[in-house]
Amino acid sequence: MRKDDCIFCKIAAGDIPSNTVYEDERFRVILDLNPASKGHALVLPKNHADDIFDLSEEDRASVLSVAARVAAAMKKALCCSGINIVQNNGESAGQTVKHFHLHIIPRYDGDSAMVLWNPGKSDPEEQKKTAESIKAALE
Ligand code: 5GP
Ligand code: ZN
Image (cartoon, rainbow, N blue to C red; front, side):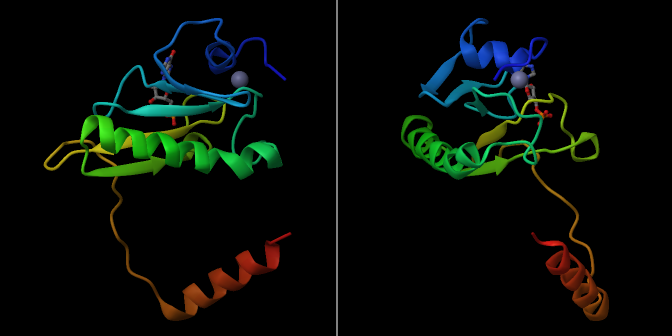
């Protein structure tokens, strides 16, 4: 299931060339065009999904094991000291390409790649209510 005007559908299908590091029948893993660090890669499902909410159950179930295999290969090949796995959904979360993708970002001691947030403060009552509301909405 491809979406006609989707660049990641075209890359995942091999219609647009990419630096592919892994491929199977459901996924292609490519190097990011604007890497946050050396080896920054994207796991692309071949079936189009806008975001995590749209991703098929099959792809959801296997995307992390693909990422884990590639991350292990990066540790060997690139000698990175850490790995960030990042996945953005929606503009407010920083998603710029509307085809689900999971970032694998190798990290090196002292590098300047930014995958950070400012730790906030939590209020115990507020936290309890927040947890309850999420629990109640689980399907
Ligand atoms: P997002 O911000 O949506 O989570 O991440 C989109 C990522 O896709 C960015 O890191 C961006 O550099 C990368 N990207 C956008 N267009 C292309 C492309 O045509 N080829 C490759 N390899 N990466 C792309
Ligand atoms: Zn697509």
